[in-house]
Amino acid sequence: MALVIVVEDGTIVTGANSYLSVADADAIIEVDFRLWPIWDARDTETKEQLLMLATRYLDEWYIWNGRKVQLADPDAVPPVVAQRLQWPRKGVRDCSGCAIGEGVIPEELQKATAYLAVWLWLHDPEAIFEQSGIKRFRNDTVEIEWQDNFGGISSSMQPSFFTRLLECFGTGPGERGFKPIIRK
Image (cartoon, rainbow, N blue to C red; front, side, top):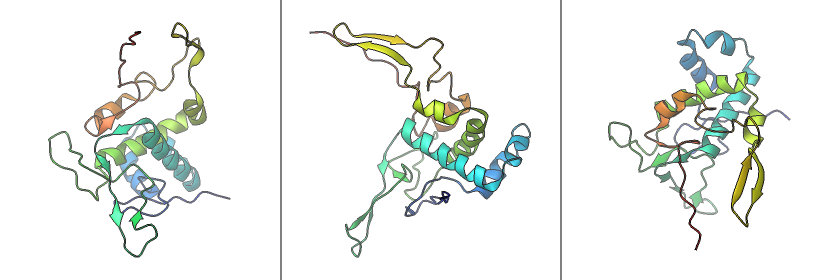
């Protein structure tokens, strides 16, 4: 059974699984002459799968500012419509400090989704999602040993444009820092 792309347009679309349609991704990527040949060579079904995977990555690996929008529908059971994706959100501001509307998927998120779809095509997406990087963890002395040559989902593995595009909207992998472990 083939997956069907369902694009979130800011109205909390039932079953949404992508922040971008193939046509919109084409328009975004077309302006970048370095990436267009890679993207254009893909068939529509592959592009849809990559956009859905990019959306999944963004939703699973980013901690977004604000909170999900909830729509009240008195005829629905339950009376609040569940939002599948992390966007749209309320209480989010752009880098200029202006409020992002509750029914808006920011242009920066759309661009990040398009470019991430290309980036995922060039890398092994399942390996990216499945790697934990931890080879051994000992709790009695709090010891963690990382696998050799592990890149993981970090700021060094993800494209740098994510940080620039999305820095005002949330925190991505590799940007969270560490808190000291205090033993009492």
